[in-house]
Amino acid sequence: SALGRTRGRVRDDRGARMGGDDHDARLNPIKNASVGARKMRRRSSYWAPGITTDDVRRNDIKSAAREAFAAYEAVAMGHDELAPVSNRGVDDFGGFGATLVDSLDTLYVMGLREEFTRALMYLKKRDSALSALARGEVNRDVSVFETNIRILGGLLSTYDLTGDADVLELSETLASRLSAAFQTPSGVPRSFVNVKTGHSFGLPWVGKASILADFGSMHLEWATLSARARNPIYEAHTSAVFDKIMATPVASSMPTGLFPVLFNPETGAWVGQKVSFGSLGDSFYEYLIKCWRSLDALHEADAWRRAFDAAMAAMKTSLLHTWKTSENGERFAYVAPLGGDATSMEHLTCFMPGMLVLGGAEAPTQALADDYVQMAKDIARTCVAMYTSTPTGLSADTVQFVANATSPTFTVRKSIQRPETVESLFYLYRKTGDDAYRQQAWTIFQAMKRNYRTSNGGWQGIKDVSVEHAQGDDKQQSFFLAETLKYLYLTFSDGETMHLDEWVFNTEAHPFKITKNVTKVEAAVAM
Image: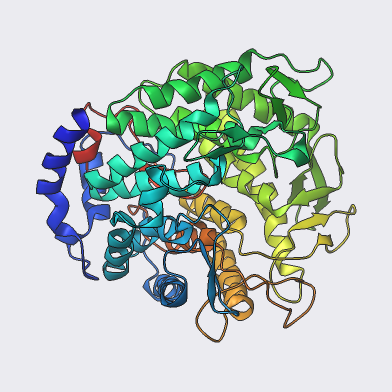
């Protein structure tokens, strides 16, 4: 098989390169990857030149990742997540070892090679929970979306970074288990699937409908898997889902380019008219631009770009609002749901500035690119204010905006280590080179450090951002290592590290090599 041919070649080339906390060129495929990619893909002038590393601050973030992973490894190894106060492991994502997989590429990018090697070797053991679940030996229901972005995404990024063919094989095995969810009359997957029996089902709290942010945020991973494994079946599943989304009519009263957050996979029709760039809808729009920018031979590629631009135009007209304007004329904007509270925004929505920055790259016109970047700055300004307006320096999960009020009103007061604001600050810094974005990211990290750290080295969220010394939630999110700390680390790295013309991040911040406009070199050795 093609997979068998790949395995021998890649292991011979790279298998000996793992291990150690070494940063020389031979042991740093991040740098090697950038050098290789420059031979194949022309760099755009879109990104700010001359970005250099801030070693002191980057090392502090690296130390936080080392500390958080060590706390997980000490008492929760193999479990999905760490409960750092009760000092135990918890399994909320099927018992795959979500933190292990979510952490792999973060450990690798940061040069924490000993931790990376231990984590990977644990996952690759035949008796690991991930191996057993992927082989269908455990009768367990798993979320198709969470398993896709966290587990499959983490495995694929590890493959792209290391060329480890065993990891690719594990990715394929896992995807084959998830594939049963696509066996619906519409081809749109149900939300959960049993990895042993293949039985799939929807969630009762949404009337068993499928969620746009779930089924609409799979193509980047599945097309990447098809390209790496040379097996078109995975891409075919998710490409058909995109076609179904585009072909299914929405209510005539809805803004053109936007889609309801719920879809009935049995009837093939949309459910309701609620639109969200927060929960239930967010990453679908993110993947429109990321797939278009990143995937070679993307089916109906122009349709993805048109869909993104149409969605942004409708968002600007119908969902984008002004909270206030500063004395020097700076706009503070926010994006509210359509069919919900028009004065509210979730922290989840703070991913949008980063998405808009990506949308400006290779935009159809310079005017549109400029508009996207300006909207990104305006929304990011509000997202940062959601942090600076609290006693803890951390943002609430959901806020409301009263016109021209000094601070937002906190409606959901918890802070659960979310990455979206620091993610957007990373993109804005890479785009503009404006040190203000680095400083904002650093201030947020310092607030996280004050409020999230526990006495045993683990990090947890807090229940109320409006109270100093707030009670913790006893949960170290796997995405804290996968996303939050990775984006912070990259914000203080040089511009060549994970260059955005060479790498694309899935919605869990797992990096894949961009294949669009890249010379036809086998992906496993293209680095």
